[in-house]
Image (cartoon, rainbow, N blue to C red; front, side, top):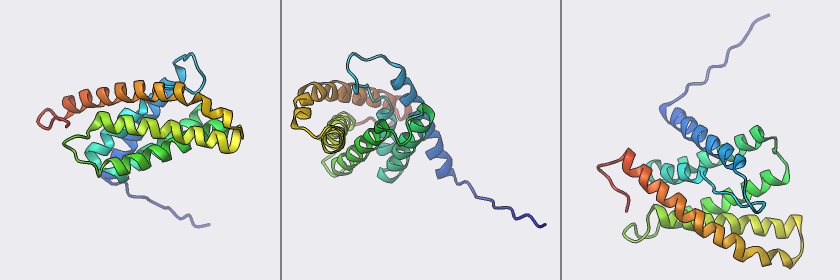
Length: 177
């Protein structure tokens, strides 16, 4: 019997994505462990990694890191293919779409904090839309918008500020705009 061996070459880019995704997954696990007063409200700490990845390595790498975070986090938390997984995926996809648009905005006025805020609002909008279309097909879901919008505002700004602080630590010669 002959054995065939398949070897995949790991590039430096692959290793970078893996390290960034591992950091994002770790922060997702921390998020899951933080008790919050309302179900579905989480700080979204992994988004700090996504923001830094976007700013430093571009949108394509940020997409890989974000999607790997969603899938690996769901597997580790035992939520793969559960409603929470699909909510997380919907939020990630809508926030990535918002970040794709935000990158085209003038860097003079839009930086990590505004990107974080836009992504946070898009994330919750995507999740609420999925809840309305799939889990709770009633317009009463939209009465939750003020609560979730406030959480998105607070955590979006805080995560953006944390990303700015980390950016300065990582790139002291290139401050964020």
